[in-house]
Amino acid sequence: MTLTALNAAKQYQSLRPATTPQPGGEGAVQTAVNAAKDFAETLAMSETESVRAMSGDGDPHKLVHALAQTELAVETAVAVRDKVVEAYQEILRMPV
Image (cartoon, rainbow, N blue to C red):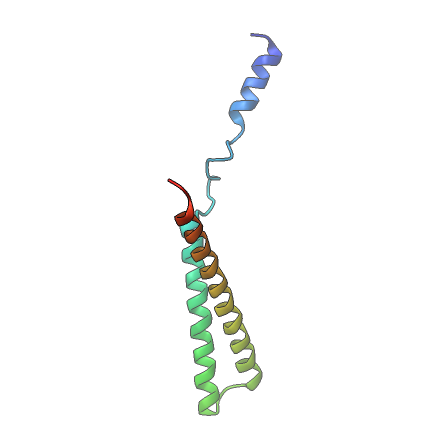
């Protein structure tokens, strides 16, 4: 084996295949769990601001901001759900 071929073989072995996960990276499951936690935190924050506003202690600007964030979070969750359902339906249509 020549020096060039040996060098090429070492470089090839050192490269990470595209199918293996990156070390220390998050997987799809962990990403989904983090997204669900963020969604729940957003809803809880909005609920807290709503309760404060109803009791007269809240800032109206914070309430509007919290409601806008909640609306965006719900719209995002619905869009993701729609894409998951669409993908599932496409899988069901695949011939076996």
